Amino acid sequence: MDFHHLMLFFFSAVGAFNGLFLSAYFALFIKHKSRSTYFLSALLFAISTRVTKSVFLIFYPDTSNAFIQVGLTACALIGPLLYLYVKTTVQDGKIGKWEWAYHLVPISLIMALIWYLYPYQDNPFLWRRTQSGFFSWMLYSYWFVYLVLSAHLIRPLVWKLFTKRDKLIDRDVWLISLVSGVSIIWLGYTTTNYTSYIVGAFSFTFVFYLLVLLWIFKRRKATLFFDEPVKYANRKIETGEADVLAEKLKLHFEEKEIFRNPDLTLSDVAEALDVPSHLLSQYLNDNLGKSFSSFVNEYRIRAVEQELLKEDHQLTLEAIGNECGFRSNSSFYAAFKKIRGVTPAQFRKAQK
Image (tube, rainbow, N blue to C red; front, top):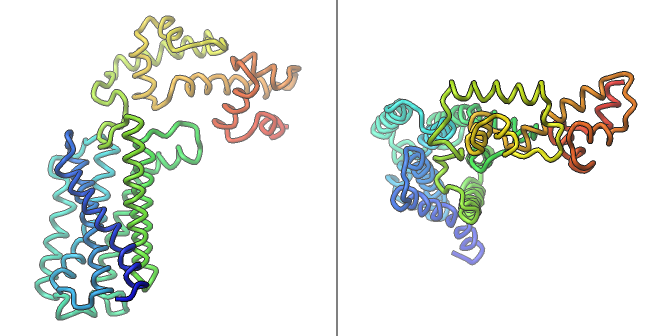
């Protein structure tokens, strides 16, 4: 193997080997394991096995047919494992005890039967991406269906990303990145004939990005395991108590308009509501998915809009912002643009 092919092999294989390492790490070495971490470990193992098969098949054509068959079987499990991991993470592990079996056991049995009846060794044309490659197209179509299901689960997170009305938490960024990364790998397999080169590179980038994200989360003291996505996930506020807090907040923000105080703090609001500060913070973060500043600024922006919709208002934009609780013009313009997607001047012009 010349230097050129050696480098292609290295960059194609390194991502797959890193994926196998991370798979073992999540399965064996983390302290707080959950179903979601096991699904993540299995997902990384399936992707890495699939990519490793491609790399060795291209660079070492005499690779064992049994290993090739294992790689193709792993391809059938990538989609279901991605879906199960995303679902358990989004729903904080609240899925049926045996739901995983409905997604993994049938396809595993089907692949075992196909392996027995139509092994790659005797029917390679059925497993290649050609017109007669029925099993190949079946595998990638099956993978695609689960990609769509996974994307459907994270659609609220993507909406938050583009509207910028609510701040994305680390878990949200992670899930969007994961589904996007697996989608890129799927595209690499289904849109090019140079599968191992491109998918190996994609896999390397994908797994490297995983490592960078893990390092960032560790430096920020965030969870490495993504099974505790919300600050207060283990002690959520009961529905009845949450309803009482919602009514109190409505009274003080909609009727008393305490948001007009530019020096308003979480402690001030908690004192007005006669509740502990940590309880109010828990409600805002866990039940509403918003920070205190985002919650207050939304009320301030709505008040600004009501002023701008008045036909006889005489105040400047800056004065209206100050009247509605913004301490400075910069914070006013930044909050308005973040929540509404346009500047106050653009909003006022659109109403004329």
